[in-house]
Length: 399
Image (cartoon, rainbow, N blue to C red):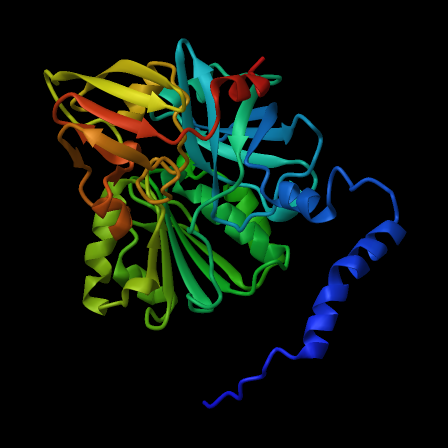
């Protein structure tokens, strides 16, 4: 395109000369009130993205012999921030001298969050989960992150017909998705296959049955592997069983359960040649590696203006080593996906858990790692971009 040059003429110079006096005059005539301390947009942003919240355990009840339901409210009485059914929060606490956190899928619905109520269900399957199952009591306080995660329905990405497959405690995100659907907050049609060994291990069966009565776009199929029960299928959630209830083409699949279930379902769905975006699975935390006599190394951690040296075992992640030493290392998903824990690698060899390297190409190029899925092979040194200073965490302190 051809642009015509405009010379800087006399009138332009005159306007420019008058601009500063005019501006000073307008400022002098303006209101002398001080600027507000808080803007409405900032207030709204804090409500939607509070970062960390202090929460109190207000109710607890057993669901099965291994799963306990925990109900929380915010200590400041504000509503919980908005989330999508299927997302998770990370719960932080101090157990002994270790400052630990674990992600748990949200069971309750977004509408319940507006009433300052958020529900989690925790299976007794680890160090932190055992504490929450057996030791945590009503009145205890914890630090909770805002909801996160990509394990939820996305209109532009997913089919309107979704098939959800749950195994054991993997039912938790689907209860929230089903509740959101029944509340009218979502627009998909949901077919849920819920597998367990026995009927006694079907958590939330009564709640799911009630939701199916409320919502005609929700159907639940119970599948038991170790016993026969009326109104329940027997065996495992196979492709043949799913075809009995729906056409498997043009569907989006959501999976949440134990690793063995993922492996089995992946083989069952392989002949369908589904596109990658048609399947989503909730990633489990990266656990310790099996080892008889794991080697011990020294991990040097730079965290803000301080330097720590902590022991790190070859079979545990760098994040676990830092938590065991009482360091407040930032983390959320603990599965290598969210990138919240990303830290600068300084020295030392390491390896990343298979299938868990969620780093961007730029992070790999410039030497960043995710401590939640990184295991040491020798003495290491890293620089952690801490989310909270120690004194800040104490402001949320657990009573």
